[in-house]
Every structure is written in structure tokens, then in C-alpha cells.
Image (cartoon, rainbow, N blue to C red; front, side, top):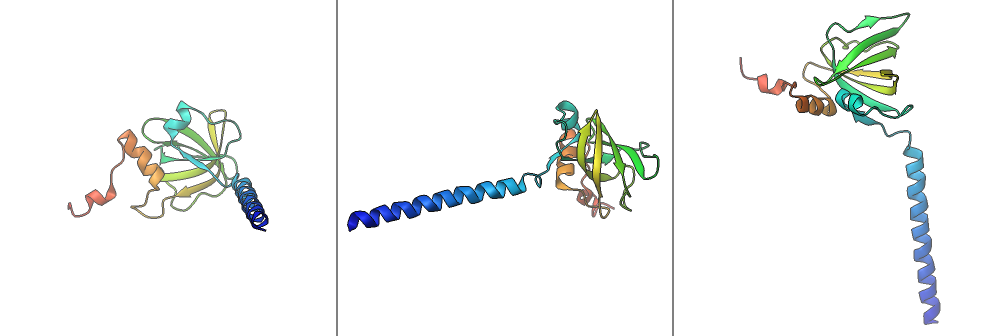
Length: 152
């Protein structure tokens, strides 16, 4: 009788381990397209991602680079102070999107141009995505807006 309980306990533990591994695998499979990595323009230029990889790029929109193409196609460049990447986007840009402001785009890198499927712009005068701020700090071009508060 004692051997039967031990055998049953081992079977239950083994079944639980298999179920846990299966659940983890299914969760990973379901999330495979939902994970997008952030890259700064310097990283993209230094080591271009493989074709078809969807990722996010962020930085400042380069002054004088914004140009309207056919229909709703917009071309501009994004920089982190160390490198500049041309961006092409078809769609309506956010209202707050302007040159010299922070942005994040999601899309793919094709033949030296970032083809964006989504563009996000900062939402107020002090907001900047953490990834963009970190990349700009690394390049030495980031100016903290909170440091200017109280220095009138």
C-alpha cells in the first residue's frame, strides 16, 4: 500500500511538471509577435536588425527632415545625436508630432529605411519615453526638463 501511494504521488508531480512546461510553451508561443524591442538610431546603424523583424525606434525628429509625399506618406529622419535613420510612414501623424520633438515608431528596417506602421509622439512639453531619454543621455544630448524648473 505504501509503495502505491508513493507511485501515485510521483505520477501527480510528473503530470504537474508536464502541464507547467506545456502552459509556459503556449504562453511563449502566443506572445511571440507581441514583444517588440526598442532600439536607438545608433544601435540600428551599428548593427541593422534582420529583415522582417518588428521593433521600435525612438529619438528626436531631425530639424528640416519632415517632408510630405504622395497622399499620406510622410518621410523624416530620427536621431539620437549619434546617428540618423530615415523613416517612412503612411498614415496620419499624431497632432503633437513636430520636428525637434521626441517620437517612437514601430515597424521594420528595409534597405536602410525604417518603414513605420505606427508613430507615437510625446503628449506634453515634458514627457519623453524612458527608452528615448536613456538613448539621448548615452549620446550626451538629453536635457532634463525638470532641471530647468525653479531656475528662472
